[in-house]
Image (tube, one colour):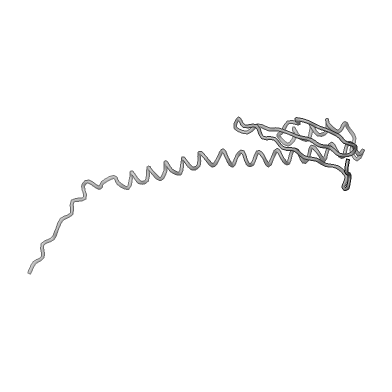
Length: 122
């Protein structure tokens, strides 16, 4: 006995994989366009924090006489070398309190740091 072979018409399924592939590529591009700027802002905030730390240490060292120069000028120099701009610099004895800001993708990122000798309450 011979079995009848049933033919399946797959003509209407052509191109389905292309549609799925285009959808996946679109989703990947969407996710990347959201996360790349966010990661860039995070990296820039870390750079601003590093710039603030370096600026505060430079100002505190100049204030204590460890290095030569005007404390807040040294802080501004170190902040600019690290890609930020000094926003404020306050000295309280040998303690330096600085804040810096930087721009990333049109967003302002700021950081603040304080440096001085250990145990100084000032």
